Image (cartoon, rainbow, N blue to C red):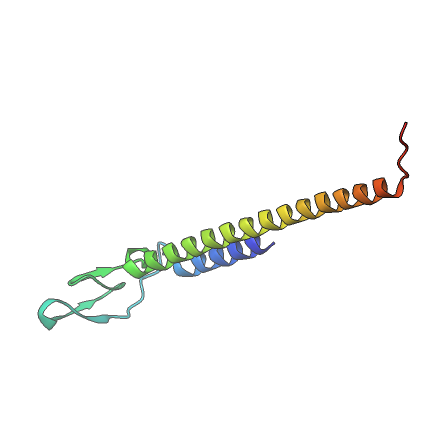
Length: 119
């Protein structure tokens, strides 16, 4: 259940971050971004956002931090899965050991109640 919720939230985040394709009649937004490039020279991005020293990028996946965030999310997810598996296996081993101890305890007490017959 937790894994489904995590995957659902990741998919929702991905849908929010990725740009929607522009229809044939729609024009890109007219927001212009002023960027600082090499030697503190400014340049203007008509569409998209600043990336690099003198470039304009149109998609979030062209940004370095986008991939950094996804890498961290994936690594943390893998760590959580490994931790959950280890805890599950440890609990199962403890339950098995408890059952073995319980069986041994019952058998030891059952045999001590019987009288010894020597022939």
